[in-house]
Image 1 (tube, rainbow, N blue to C red):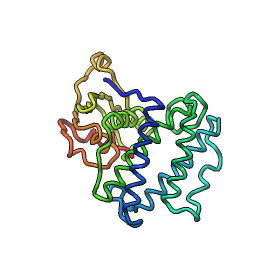
Image 2: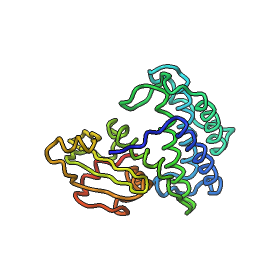
Image 3: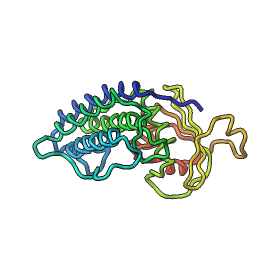
Image 4: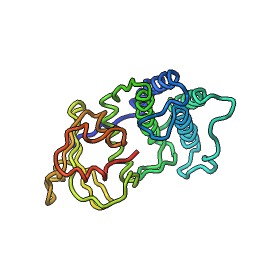
Amino acid sequence: MSRVHGTKDFWIGALRAEGPAFAAAVAEAPPETPVLSCPGWTITDLTEHLGEVYRRVQIYVTANSTARPEGVEAGGRPPELTPLQFFQQGYDRLMATFDGLDPEAPAWNWAPQPKKAGFWPRRVAHETSVHRWDAQLAIAAGEPIEAKLAADGVSEILDTWLPAGKRKATGQWHGVVHLAAPDAGQDWYLRLRGEGVALLDTATILDHDDHHARVEVSGTASDLLLALMGRVSFDTLGVRGDRALLDGLRTG
């Protein structure tokens, strides 16, 4: 199994493209435009959400502590700012912070990863790219997520979201899943055991019984990521085998 190993510069570079693209899309849409990929949300809700993510991450990476900062829930959009201004203010501040960020500095996160600041540029890059896609879809202009970034987003779901228990559904799943993104030259094998999940190397799979994948999914890295995040159906990809296992991979 090969996975993209991003760097701070890679994720900041992605944010330099995805942030302005998000802003352009929401500026084009009337505030109450429904966001079809986020049922119940409007463009205003989506914009405020991403601005709030930036505000909180700014606190996490500047607190110089592995403990979750107190009072982080308090905040939200100040009344003197429009939703887009709130987004832009948060984006600009966070990008300036990320530029000088030491990835090894202590910083809280919710995942089973080391509590280091380097967690957050990756997380924010993927949060922004998927919500950029949401915003563009709302104005019928959705562009795929760039292949290398999307492949790293798939890896993030498998190595971060699922081990943290962030699934859409509850249940027990058992078997090996093979995901393939030929456009990014990436394959992922993972073993589901009840509520647990383990990423596997090909050599590791061959050391176990029942090593054959019970389901295989192939598509572009962007479509794989969007399917795992619940934005598109797995039916839009090539699926062979036990589709029920895919319910154990959805997050978002």
